[in-house]
Length: 189
Picture 1 (cartoon, rainbow, N blue to C red):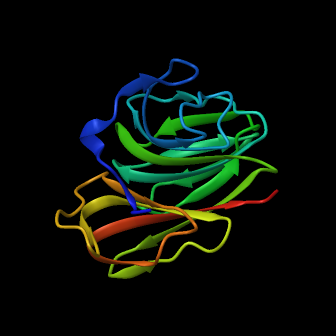
Picture 2: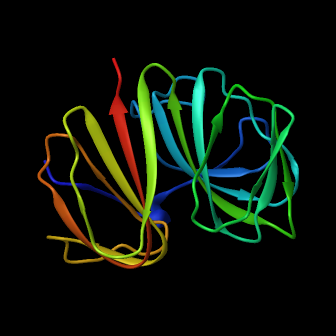
């Protein structure tokens, strides 16, 4: 099976679960899953104003600021300044979480996994890399800034385009001119 290319222009924005913002799903598993029944979900969100985050019971989250000055997340009463671009921050989806924007709107990249089913790790790459899924792991790479070109592809990936590899696929060399977020999604049961 060939890697799956997921183009940003093919995505449809939708309201957040709590109606407080807009999210654009990159990919979810199983295919067609909603916000209540995914095993894992990867999305990009536009955050225009401060306010509460949606609660996702039994879900672990990793959020990464892509654009804008950042935010302060208050997670179960503890404040966390999340203002470094392209630096992943992990927290529990069960937690009461409130967002205070620092100085205007942001765009963030979100990874959510159902605890006990899937484990996620997010890393950031600023040069060439090899995407190599281990057994039981899927790998998604998304361009947060600039461009990237997966080996064997005649057309590169632009901003917020992604590539998804299953665990039975051969490794793929990726040339990066910008910032690439790499998500490893490992089945735990």
